[in-house]
Length: 316
Image (cartoon, rainbow, N blue to C red; front, side):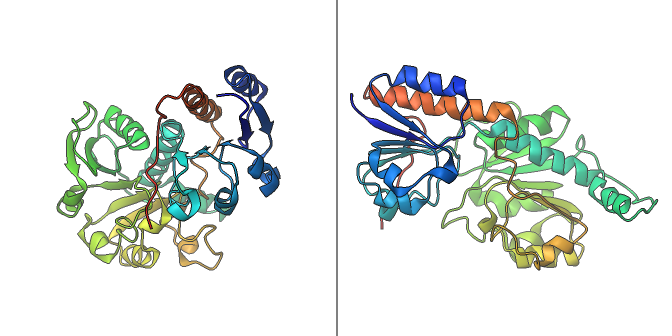
C-alpha cells in the first residue's frame, strides 16, 4: 500500500517517530498532540494512530482504520461512529501500570495508610487499629485479561488465594487458584476478602455492582475498581460503606468523570480515589508498549495481514 496519510496523535518521542517512519516509508505521516487535532487533519488521514474525539472519527472522510492508544474502546465501537471501518485497541499495553497502581491501593487500604495520611494532614497522632494482610487473603479478580492477569501475578506472588473471573472459558493460569465464568460471581462474592474489577463498559456490565452484589460481599472486605466507572452504582456503594459492610473501596474510575466535587464519595474516609490515572503514561514503559502495538499493527496493515486487537463494532 502506497501513498497513505497517517495521522498520529499519540504524545510520542523521537525514537518512536523514527520507528513509524521506517515502517511506513512511502506514507505521509502527520504528527500532532491530542489537544492539537482538528477535523481538517482527521479528514486527510486514511489511518489514525491514537484517540481522537468520536465525532471527529465519525466525520473523517478518508478513514480506513483507527488504532486507539487506549485499551478501552466502548465509546468508539459503535456502527454510528465507525461504520464499516476497522477499529483496533491497545489491549496489552497497560497491564503493568494499571495492576501496580490498583495493587498499591489495595495494600494501602489493608494497612490503613489512607487513614494515617488523613491523620497526618490533621496533625493527629493516633492508632487506627487492626490491619489485614495480602498473604492470607482471598482475592477475586473480575476480568482476567492483560490487566487482570498482571494483578493476579502480584497477588499470587505475595501469597494470596486468587479467584479469577472470565466471560468465556480458557485454561487456568498457574498464578490463579480457581477460574470461573462471570455467571458464577454471586456465588463467589461471600468468599472474597477483596473484589477487584477490571471489567469494561458494556450493556451486560453497566450497573453490575449494585446493592445485591454489595450485600453478598464478605463483611469487612474491600472493593476496587480499575475497569469502568459505569459498572458500579455509586449510590449503592456509598450505602454499603455507610453501613460498615465494606472495609473500604479504591476507585481509579468513577461515573461520571470527573467526579463532581459535591459527590459523597469524596468525603468518605474509607474510600481511596485517584482520577483515572492508573492507565496513563506516568510509567514510561507504557508509552513504549503502546507504540510497539501501533507499530506492529501498522506493519500488518501495510502488508495486508490481520490486525491485532481487532474490535467488533456494535451493530445498531
